Length: 124
Image 1 (cartoon, rainbow, N blue to C red):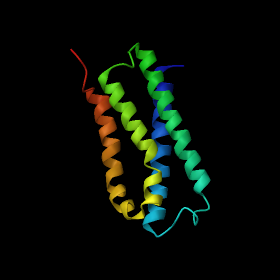
Image 2: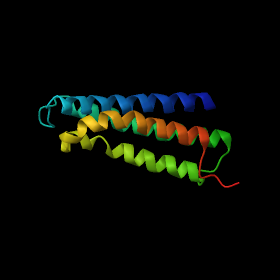
Image 3: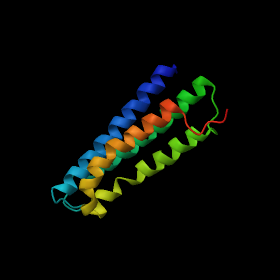
Image 4: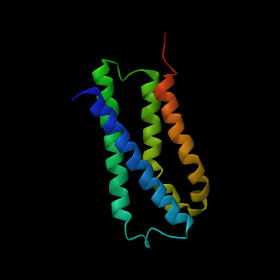
């Protein structure tokens, strides 16, 4: 597949993950619980599918560019990806953290973009 397809896949995954996180966070901020969310399965599936697309798109882009996944910035992105994977549990298990999470989510996305663009932790 062309590089651009992997990039679009990565962006679609990002939008899906942040949409699911935003929905779950808003639900918790409005007093909703896990039990009161009839769309819990759909939100979880969207989050998981988005995470998969982000990972597949990201590593696909690396392969197309002929770059090694062992670079420091790639490892930082994978660690961030793992953290984002766990964020879905936060608003419904700790509803008091939903409002702060609402403001942290764009910063996390920005951190991911900064790592991808600036490629810190690269030797040389």
